[in-house]
Image 1 (cartoon, rainbow, N blue to C red):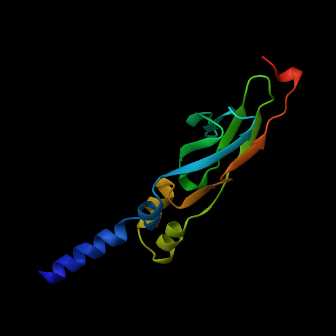
Image 2 (cartoon, one colour; image 1 turned 180 degrees about the vertical axis):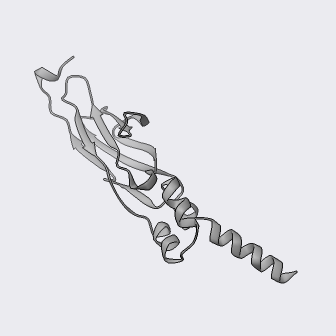
Image 3 (cartoon, rainbow, N blue to C red; image 1 turned 30 degrees about the horizontal axis):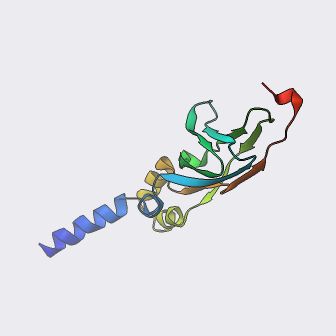
Length: 135
């Protein structure tokens, strides 16, 4: 009976991603865009809205990027020129652990995005006021 419990525990441990357990599949990113009240939205490469719009200063909750895919962040406010930012990512501790332990969980972490942290965090931008950008 104890052997069965140990085997079951081993199967569960090897089939779950450390990144998913430690970090989850979503990340809350700080927004520090000037002027206050600017709206930030996050898009995939295909133009699909992933999160937002959210007001700055504040936070936005974004799904972690599957397979390390970058996002496009758009900050805008009427009367100001919009700014576009391409996200980057770095390994999460849990994602690295999944790979080092050679678990099937590393595939789970890659697929759910839990292996990656989105950068920059926080997003710090200053929008420029320009007559040509007014609506």
